[in-house]
Length: 196
Image 1 (cartoon, one colour):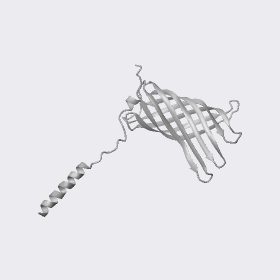
Image 2: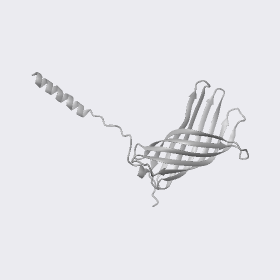
Image 3: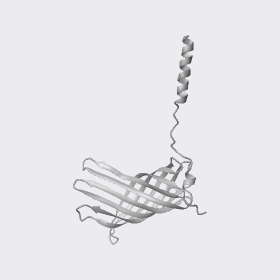
Image 4: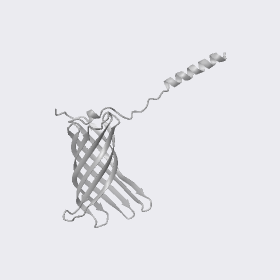
């Protein structure tokens, strides 16, 4: 009787184990070749320079929405927007800009779910400092970056970038502001009308 009860218990536990198996969530998709094909669109945003400084009570947030069209396989052209806010005790600084961009996905080192890319942009930017004469309404904006894209679905990818940006408010002066930046973002790849 004990043996029969033990077999019955093991059978019930086995049935529940099979029924309760959980599938592993999808973390990649072998589809990057299709997503970065000629005629498709890429839209998304990046997030960079987000921090809060406790000693100076300063909050900083920058987002970079962008959209681009694939003029050929691996090459997309479009535009990006820069929006930033720095809030500190006694004021705020609002950063803005727009820049045409070009992005190239390298076929070398590609996997079924990821690609390395390079991106460059040239445009204008500016900032508005509340209650200050330190505004720079229009500045030259130059940027280059390298990044890594990982496709988590056939049309959605997460990416990380390391870039260099340079801004210059007065073309006549020799000095400008430059710096390195690390960013994270996502892109959605939409099928478009193929022009082949």
